[in-house]
Amino acid sequence: MATAPRPKARARSAQRQQAMVDAAARLLIEEGPDAVTHRKVAAAAGVPAGSAGYYFPTRQELYAAAVAAAEGVRTAGAAARAAALPRRRRSATATATLLLEVLYAPALDRAVVTRRLQPMLEATSDPDLRPIMAASRPALLAALRETLDRCGWGEVGASADFDLVVRMLDAALLYGAAAGDDDPVADAVADVARLLELVRGAR
Image (cartoon, rainbow, N blue to C red; front, side):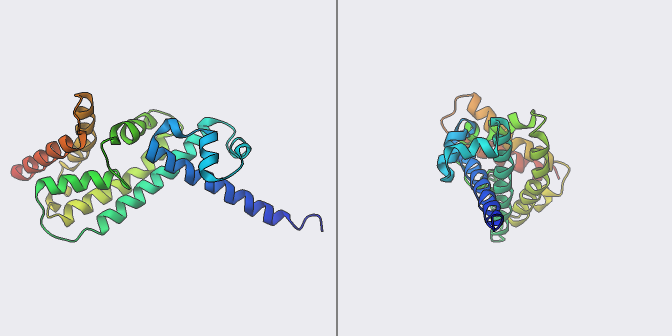
């Protein structure tokens, strides 16, 4: 009789751990890396503060779980956003906007560089996090290609210059932020739109 509660206890333990992973991912996406602490994650997950250290003994383990879950949210959001786009020809500016929205799903705002892009770039230089970031890349690229196709720019997605467009999405945001632009997203849209036109014109 003493062993009967164990399956329930294991299920409850798994639920708490998953709640913490989900909460850590939300905090990472919405507030950035500094928000992913044992105390904040436990509070956001609605579990006892001591549970955080039990399931994730180190901050690095907690952060790795947050990155993996956040990338899962990102890739799912990117695929859903791209698939939901009605097929019609769109301008270069409208298409560039959608490319950024898809790449930074589920939400894109002016804080995207500090809260999302810079932490992602830092993660690619971490041996423990690099495989997580690399694993999500194919799904993101597929979503970007689908976006181009649904916007009437399919030839760009199928061209050798597709990688250049993808690199510009990140680079334009970083450049705008480094230049002190008030709205790096708007500047990135303009840069990416110009590149789309150049790639199309060169074909």
